[in-house]
Image 1 (cartoon, rainbow, N blue to C red):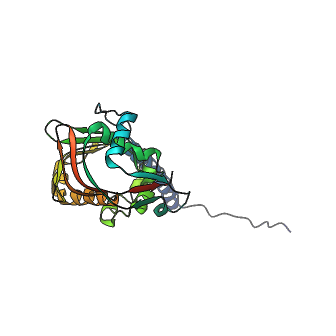
Image 2 (image 1 turned 60 degrees about the vertical axis):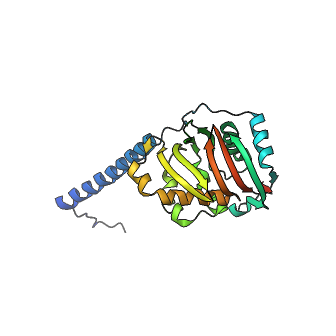
Image 3 (image 1 turned 90 degrees about the vertical axis):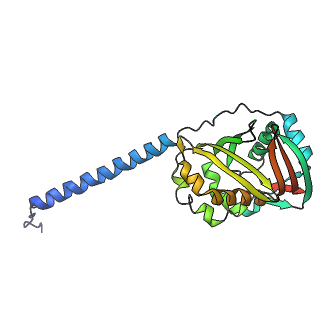
Length: 250
């Protein structure tokens, strides 16, 4: 039998107002989320790296590889980042490397290793011995690169929970005065810019040792040991050791 005792309780004005406010808040949160993404996108929207006027040719790449004397090999496909990179052996290094050769060397892994986190790199050596590097950060490769090269947590913790929120692959621009004396990195970053955001000078100054530690760790992670290195007369004069071979998963 049909229920003839159907009735409804009208909402009080308070409940109605509360629902309206909740609905408005949801809309507000969505709008704010969109605004935040737009702001982040605008700040990092400078996805084209600054040109330093430093190019390279196949001859530059062949020349720097001859100076280093390393062998490059391929690894089988794997879903495990730590199996995408293999560094073996050690051999002495004593060389002078030009800025075009350095630029070629820094771009070479882009076509060899699927987890290389940068591309379109240019490296310039100024007349006063200072250097500048520009390029593009490949956000999607960050996690795999960290695992493959065992980046210490004190460095990754700064960006690990934020890097995947970046909606674009931002450019970077780093200027500094560096050299290595008896295995110790000397100097510091003078300017660091990601997208259109420049890190405050007091931050780079206050974290000089932290940044130096990161650079030294990255050099070691590449299987290199640098005893002395100095940028002079438009070249990198370097002594130390490099791996005999490096294998990449493409």
